[in-house]
Length: 241
Image (tube, rainbow, N blue to C red; front, top):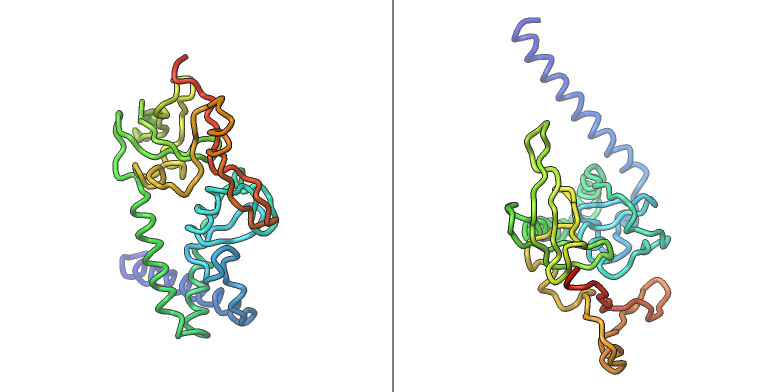
């Protein structure tokens, strides 16, 4: 096969892929004409940057991350989301965009703005560089965000790339140090979460019952309309070994 034939073959393959994608979107468009099929159950707006859970339910990326700050049960079925892997649904994003453009063009501008806001959110959350001694926000196993320091880097011998970060949690002893994959969603730029006052945080153990009750502010669980989740979590870790 000469260069010209290869070029033609490449163009044909590209056209074939584009045709399959268009047919896929069109097939679903033929079945779905209700905007509620593309609505996020949390914010009740069109899903932006769709993320699906193991249970099969799909949410906006930002909505899901914010919801996980307070609750572990899926907003729909109450399955434990914190043990579920996320799957980004790029085809669904495309379908939603095409659906709005075809059936609700008056809402397209608002949707495009939401996509821009999501892109900016990702940019602000992203850790720009990784260096030993650098402080970043780290989500611990209890799903509480802490200030962490990168203690060591573990390099993959095969690809010569950073594979794991050894994290030391500020204010905690070395026994709480943790090895976390470099591409983990548990990292954020310093202050992205820890500077907020509206999310769960730790408080030091106290024997004063009045102070303890004052700190145990609770927030509402929308699944059962009951006040059952502590906004502040008691920190029983020791500052020394």
